[in-house]
Image (tube, helix red, strand yellow):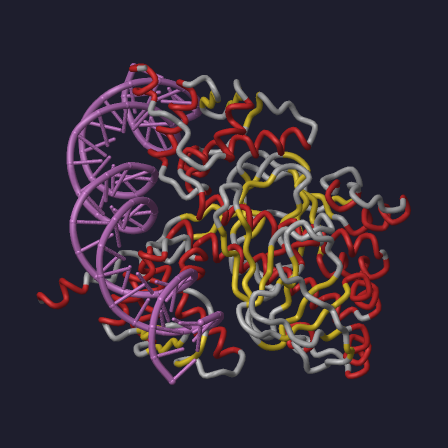
Length: 251
Length: 251
DNA sequence: CGTGAGGTTGACTTCGGTCAACGTTTGTGG
DNA sequence: CCACAAACGTTGACCGAAGTCAACCTCACG
C-alpha cells in the first residue's frame, strides 16, 4: 500500500517525546542533542504505514498527533490488533530483537510522527544516562502493557473487556491532558473488537447495553462516558455485571 | 511465603547469562566486568519466590538451572500465569517502569539463578555498548513474547493452544541444546492451562486426544512428542483440526 | 496404607461466535 | 448536489466450544 514517504525536516523538541524527555527530566542541553537526531515527517495520512512486519528496523517513532494501530495478520489472514497508540507514545521497539519489525503500524487518521533513528539514539543514550534509562523504562512499560492485554484476553468476559477498554481509553486521554469524559477516537468498532478478542457483533451488542444503561455513549467516533463509576466497576469486576437490558426493562 | 534468602557468593560467567553475553559476543574483558557485578544465589527451592508484585525492583534474575513461573493474582483471586522461564532466560524487567515489580515469580523446582543488580548493570552497560544493546534486545524479545501470547489467547482455539504450547516448549528445549522430543517440565497441568487461558478440565481433555492420536504423550511431568509434524500442523492451523477421538474410532 | 492434591471423565450450561438480514453512514462520480 | 454503492454497524436466531459442576481415579508421600 502507501508507504511512508520520509521527506524529512528536522527539529522537534516538543514533538512527541514526552515519554522520553519528561519522566526523569533530561537536561536542557541533552534535549537539544536528542532534538538534533530527531527527524520529523510532514504528515502521515490515514491508511499510511509507519512500518510493516518484515521491514528492516531502523527507527523508533514518537507520535506527535493523531493515532495509529499496531497489528499482525495471522496465518489465516485474520487481523490481530496489538494496540492503539496516541500522542506521546513511542513505538517500533518490536523490531530490535531481530532488526526486523514484527508487526504493522498504520495511521488511523492524519498523524504526525517523529522519527528517532535507532543507531543514533542508542549512541546518544550511551552518553546520556537518563536517556538510556528512559529507553529502558519505555520498554518496560511495553512489557507491562502486554501483560495487561493478556490478562484482559484470558480472564475477562466480553462485558468487562469493553468496559475496561473505554475506561482505559479515558485514562489515556486524561493523562495526556485531554477531556476524558468526552473524546474522539477514530477507530472502527471492528478494530476495537479484534483488539479485545471479540467479534464486531458482540462488541456492538455490549455497546448497546452500555448505552441503554446510560453508562457510555459511543456513536461512530465520538465517545462519551456518562457514568464513570459504573464503568470502572464493570471493568474490574468478575461476574458478568451487565444485566441483559431486557431484564432491566422487565424489572 | 518463603522469601528468597540472598546468601551471595559472587562469580558466575557461564551462569545464566547466555542471553546477555552470547548473541553479540561481548569481549572477554567485558564479560569479566559483567561477571564482577553478578551475584549468585546458592539455590532456590521449589515454591520460593524470586520476587513478588509490589516489591521494590532492584535486580534482574538470570536463570541458570531449573524453571520458574511468572504470574499475577487478579482482583478476583484467580491466578493468571504470564510465562514459564528456563535456563538462559532473564527476568525482572517488568519492575523497571515503576521501580516496583508488577508480577510474582516463583520457582517450580529446585532452581539456580544469578542476580544482576540493576543499577550496577545499567552503569556498566553505559560503558559497554554491546551490553547495553543486549539489554535492549532482551526487552524487545519480551515485548514480542507478549505479542505472541496475546495472539494465542485471542486467535486460537483450545486444541491449537495446547498443540502450540507443546511445540513451543519443544523448541525452547531444542534451542538450549536439550533433547526436544522427550523432556521433563515440572509444572502442573493447571498452570499450563491457566497460561493458555483454559481450564484444567479442557486442558486434560485435549491432552487425552493428543495421546489417543499418538501425537504427544504427557504424563505427569514427562513429555514426549511422538509426531512433531502433526503437532506443528495443529499448532499453526486455523480450523479445529483435532477430530473428537470418538469420531476417529467411528471412522 | 491412608490421605489429599492433582488429574480425568461425563453431563450439562452458557457465553460468545456465526450467519443472515437489515439499517445507516460515507464518499464518489455523474 | 443528489444518487447510489460500499463499508460499517446493529439486531436476531441459532449453534457450538469451552466452562462448570460433580464424581471418580491415581499417584506421591508421610
